[in-house]
Image (cartoon, rainbow, N blue to C red; front, side):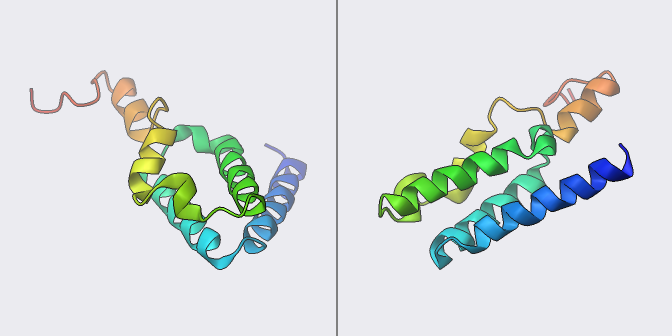
Length: 108
């Protein structure tokens, strides 16, 4: 990755976050909770940013339709996130595969 790629990535991230800041407060709060949760879980598919862009597009459509954020995702942010990434590999999965283990088999 060259310096140009780093600069371009930062530019894109700033533009993305400007879109987030334009959301109504309740949407912004939920978006940040989703972001925090997904970063903590460590989903590998987050590296290209398309998941966050998709969530933001989904939220902007909800705002345009006059729907509340919880109408879109339900009351459980973690369950919504888990559903989004259910088929995604996490960094923990990748690490276990690289060491020859299988996820969920520790201590067996």
